[in-house]
Every structure is written in structure tokens, then in C-alpha cells.
Image 1 (cartoon, rainbow, N blue to C red):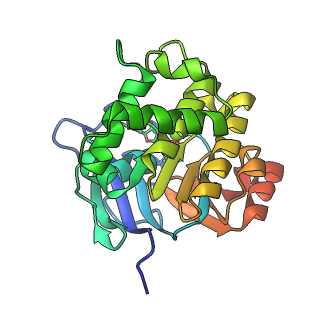
Image 2 (cartoon, rainbow, N blue to C red):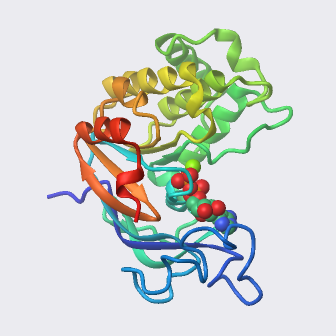
Length: 284
Ligand SMILES: Nc1ncnc2c1ncn2[C@@H]1O[C@H](COP(=O)(O)OP(=O)(O)O)[C@@H](O)[C@H]1O
Ligand SMILES: [Mg+2]
């Protein structure tokens, strides 16, 4: 029996600089006044552990196997992006309890680059725009880092040309500066291109602000589908609150995150149920 790709157990996460993040932090941005924030209703006496004020992710268990697609849905502020950023090892977020295992290894405290090298791909691990670095130059750096050895410019160009064709991308895209003036759809194409070329074992895709861009949703859905045809063992954790994405990228499991907890898990029908009923019925 091989270990599942990703095993999240009892995970609790706080943002650095908020409650539990150090002295003088209570009342920082994001903590004051929000539901479940320090002193707010739903913290004291709630069903969670005592002292969980300041926690954004409040006890999550989640297992993703090779080749599986899991969708994480939930209202704004539920903690979806925090969970995704924590999986990448983003320094803003601190694991206060629980663990993250990847291919059987405890990566809870690993640095971001070590996670990437091990085969974890996080779509937003890269800066928004990088002046003077083209898409193809960036890909070469990222591929070399992933493999732990230099990848030749020729190899990168050949692979890029192939993937751009598969993904229906304009070849001139490779020469553009990374993310500079990219539309929502182009950012997503770039993300999918990176994912395809880095050959990760698990991809975490956060659909944050481009969510409303229908073009971008289609790009992600079809793109992941194309990559999975070539790499059927790729595991995907996709964060979205748009059921529409899941029409092209059909998930094996859907998880509903509310107030930092998974309140329900199910098959694709759960996404339809959420689409019909909204999130209200799950709120405390
Ligand atoms: N760096 C941070 N500092 C303080 N609060 C944060 C930080 N990041 C996120 N939060 C808060 O955590 C909650 C969840 O945010 P987020 O994970 O972005 O939710 P989602 O992606 O589900 O919309 C929000 O209330 C947000 O304000
Ligand atoms: Mg988000």
C-alpha cells in the first residue's frame, strides 16, 4: 500500500500578526469584528477547541489520492486561500496544530521550494509580475529548480511549443514578460502551462479573483483535463466557489468549507446542491 498523495490531519492555521501570532496583535486587520474573530460570537463557547480565536483554518482533515480531483468550495472568507497558501508553506500562515503529509512524508514545516521540488505545485506561488523575465525564461528556472539540475533552453522551448499547441496557446506568449498585462484568461493559461511543464504530482489551484472570468474558468477546466490525459496520476485540489468550473473539471470529491472547517463532503452532486441552495443553510 502506498501512502495517499496528500494527507491533512487536524490542521489549524493562524495568520502571523493576528491573535496567537504574538503580543500586540489582537485587533489587527482581519481579526477585528469578523465572525469568529477574537471575542466575536462563535469563538467563545463554540464547538471548536478553546483558544481558537485568531485561527482561520480550524481543524481540517482531508486526503487526496493519486489521480483524484478534489474541489474545495465555500463562501468568501471561509479560509480556502489560507489552506492553499499553507499547503505551499507561505510564511504568512502558521500551522498551530495538525499536520500535512505529502507522499507519506511530513512536510508541515518544509520550505516552499522543498515542497515544489517534491512535486507539489501551487499556482500562485509566483509573484504577480516579474519585470524583464519572459514566460520561457521563467519556465526554465522553475523546471531546473524542480529537477535539481539545469534544463537546457532547447529542451524548455521544445516542451513549451508542444504544450502550447496542446493547450491552444499562441506561440508568441512564451516571449512575453511574466504576467505583465496578462488578462485573467492569459494568467490562467500561464498557470496551466507551468503546471503541465513542471509535471507535479499534486496541483493546488486557487481560483480567487479570476473566478468571475468565464474564459478563465474554461481555460482551467480544459487545461487540467488535457494535462491529466497525459499524467493520469496527477492529483488536483481546486479551490473555487463557482460550480461552473466543475462542469469541465469533474471532481471525485467536493468539500464545503465554512468558517475554517469542512462542514460537508460529497460527490459532484454536492456542488450542484450548493449552487441551488447557496451557502446559507450551512452557516451557524
Ligand atoms: N494574512 C492575514 N492576516 C489576517 N487575516 C487574514 C489573513 N489572511 C486571511 N485572513 C482572514 O482569514 C479569513 C479567510 O480568508 P481566506 O483564506 O482568504 O478566505 P477565502 O479564500 O475562503 O475567501 C478572512 O476573514 C481573512 O480576512
Ligand atoms: Mg480565496
